[in-house]
Length: 494
Image (tube, rainbow, N blue to C red):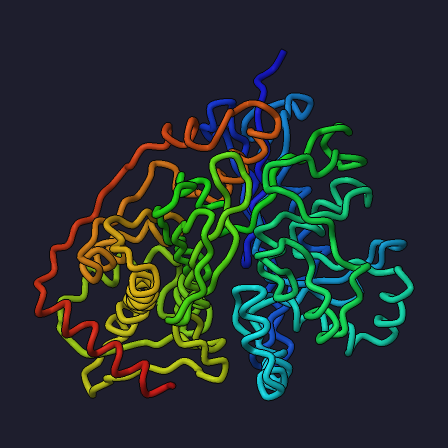
């Protein structure tokens, strides 16, 4: 008999990863590939769902091959995903009616503004914990039904299905037998009542969304279906865990207890604080959302969503051509020893928490005749930590809690300059675990609970030790000046 393992599928915004974990949640192998970002108009962002599916199949084969594993030894499959990205497909043909509309996409800002003008903002917030913003799925669903010819009639006739990307990949893995999602993803759609834990009829009516296109909602650690007809995998493998990427990262970081917090540094930055069973509506521009407890059941959290974080480094690489590889941003930032007041505000798709300005756009401030390209790179990297600082301070104000340590994960945590700067700004220890791909790890924990490999998250998460701790080195007067300079720049965009 070969080595038993868990498959974890991490469906990101710019790329997908597949991990193979052993029965102690230690990574055996992984594979990664970026996929195409489509920008049909300024502020619009789309993905091709079929490209994402093809990528997943290819990456599963590669990850299993790299680990010299046998597909017959897969215990179960966990899925984690970019959350608010919305798509609709025909359940008979299996074909998407349009590209997936990505969470970053701003095309539905006019719909959000119309809803605000009609006085609906408080209603949506009190039922969903979210803002009326183009970020979330609800207005994307409405846009698809309003703009794809014949789709609304097909939806009402029961021929179409909606899903976030987890639901799409689950549907494909099960050959169309399972149309489901979990509480964490449902809580990001703008049409799910997080307090009653049901699709909200009143909100669906306002957006004119037929309820029959919506998936069944389950605990994050539960039976979602079995594989059927998947190239490279045997039939009958349980899909036992699903969670949105940020909630999966909370699980991976063992932030399943009240008062624990983490920040994921990916395409965007997402700070979450576990509130336990008592929800709290923010007064400082944060969201209330659903996360998981130690056995994958729903509890509440405050969240601050930053739209552009690691994506600003991709911008430096792909559009400004200031660096050739993303990791070079760290080297450049560490090498700059000149003090300046250069600020990059990467509001490429508006500003998220705590400002929520859909119309803001990116800007660079503080340029002088002798400003170098290296200083611009450093300012762009700093912007990731500065945005996170604002969210964490808003979180402390809302909750009345002091965040005494910040657990971090995601690709950008490899940047030691960024992590040290984050600790300098906060004056709080920043803790980096050995396994930094916490989203994939969290999905593995959840499906491991369903398949009885683990009893609870805490039991297995303790095996992921802290690899590095960053403490503040910056002098308080310098810290204060850095924050003031940043705030002065942001104010000019609001």
